[in-house]
Image (cartoon, rainbow, N blue to C red; front, side, top):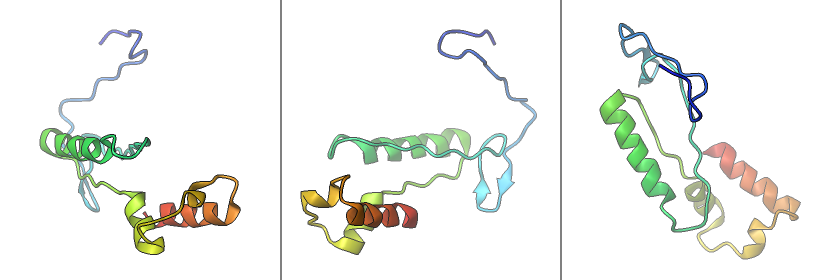
Length: 105
């Protein structure tokens, strides 16, 4: 593998390495775990993209994947209709509530 602009330090996995079985099943070729976070405006395809990435990783790599949506936790705890002030970063009380939802996810 040659280094390039997009991948300055390419690494090649040993082909003899099999899927490692973790506590919750296969976790990748060498047992690494990753978190992929998608952030953006509403209705721009974040959930769709996350589910497609999960399908790809499950099918081609045998990885154990899961999608977490912090918005679902927020809706269960504080209702579906949150006012715009709920997302105001200068409001410390609402920021603490949003952090609580993120921790639960």
